[in-house]
Image 1 (cartoon, rainbow, N blue to C red):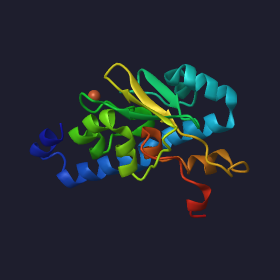
Image 2 (image 1 turned 180 degrees about the horizontal axis):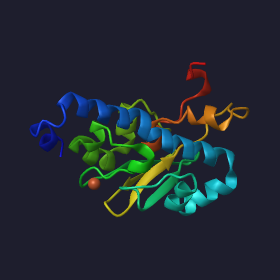
Image 3 (image 1 turned 90 degrees about the horizontal axis):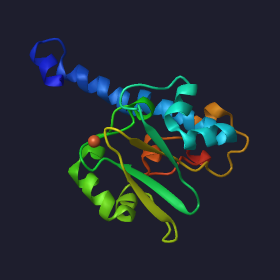
Image 4 (image 1 turned 120 degrees about the horizontal axis):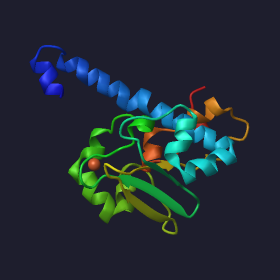
Length: 185
Ligand code: FE
């Protein structure tokens, strides 16, 4: 698609890269972060989100292509979830935007299944041995994503402030949500 547009002179390659970068890092994951912040503050919404991710996102006006069937997995003190598409790069576009390059990389796709704890550590996420890691393989039909744990010490924060702590990587499962101390306010 990109090469076709560039070839026809409709779009410069730089413009495509810029648009992808914005969608990958800024616009896309903000919607997922909004969903997570709502789940952290509204237990009924959280229950609906875990029961039917697609329907709960639609309540917030979030839906679309590559997100027709979404399953949200809750991280707890005992279980940590990570997502992958071992076959290609299936990813929940409506909540996370476009996948980062490493998510599409054959190394991540094969290694996260075999040695998830080690892959997490390479992202800077050290998970205690007693935490069970579950890896979920998305497909074109079914796309998974992660509800990270709400960081400690965030009781007084508004939904918007909470959303600012929710990163793309925390919803893929290669990071935790940010601690409040790392926010720049
Ligand atoms: Fe795929």
